[in-house]
Image 1 (spheres, rainbow, N blue to C red):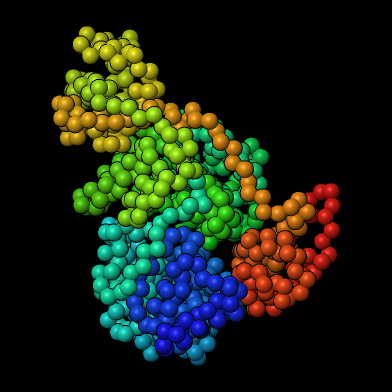
Image 2: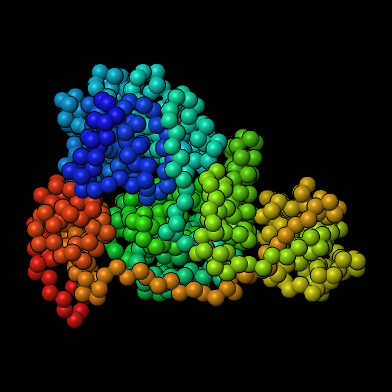
Length: 608
């Protein structure tokens, strides 16, 4: 197909099937490249509309497009959304019965399907792959393609097998899509999956609608509750490192009047599924979860993501915080971290069964995240710089821009702390060394004779909490390490350089983030009071439809569409079609219900 014809086709499909009048930045080029039969590696930020690119291309190219996806929930949601727009899509996965799989395969061989979603394990099954060679395959799409990289943050061995697609289906284009891939991961995707033969589009990693905050962990429960004061009745995700912490945090939030649900791998599968469906279909629910929750969750109205503990890497952080604000409206990302977080993460890496090279790679990724946490400049630029993206002027609404931290020459205090560790043989932990520095008169110090050391009490002019802050920053910037067995502090090479006066270090004054004035976030008002009531009414109508069809509510219409309905109050189908994101199939299926709901709505004194 010529470039001009492809462009006309995809623009027509964008309007007639998906109900959008224009592409977002970068979408059209990616879709057209795939339509023309060329391989594509697309690095696009979460919420940029990656799936629309290949879905439109799939409708233009003859044959069936096979989409590889890592999660059942993601596949089911994508298929439900496509069916709602009148697209012939199916998924074959482990939840399907044998009879269902046979029926779907018959539709495939009969040429009825345009998109077929499968897990990598299902696709690379010898029988399935062999059968596909006899079908008209339009292209392969690999979603969450960073899973290919063995050095990445989310490596999945089964993804490595997908390199066989090039040999088994020569000439069939492959599209690889992800939001999180640094330069090393991109090279590995190109080499392993695409045979170094693909156009690469790196659209950028900036999510300007998400305000980024990082706080030193002090009283985590209080910090969480303070943060949530701005989000009553709104949707959000709270990430915790352990299952026990998930359960305790969900219980706390429910006691405080929030609607919170737990999600972790220790829960029965049916409970996890039910909680996820409630989160996707209802408003005002907070999901408290481990990292077991989230990949591929396409819920546009998540207003905040809170990390109660340090994520594993910058990639993991970017992916998890990127689940907020997918609708483009203002959202928040808050992270708490402390010394124990850093130690726990280092222990997890060192205690894993990975190769030494893999451990070094993971430590480097963690170090990059720690540098982000300790940044004294615009956090958004630190994040963009990590992913190789072009820096921008300071964003003006991350915590370091709003409340610039005090930075000072930390070399003298670092030398004092390192000298205390060195003088006591590198066999004591942080609390003991702080006691030594401030001159605490505890029995353990006296028994060791360390109260007679020259360094005893030389740091008494610095408070205990500030020393804790200094040790956290020393650990974060690689001056010291923590013995994973005994918890004792060890001086690293960089620390020796500071101790011997050949290097200098800067620190951020302690508790700056905690003591900064709390800035009230005002919700952006898109609707009048009356329209707000109609919006809530339409959400209730949507929820009933979603329950009847057993699909997430946003599959029917996103919140942004309902907000447009509330403001414009469409009285007929052409007026509905004028709303961005509303296509003919959805008007045909749901139009009468929502037109009637708008026409019959009468605001009352209470909730609609």
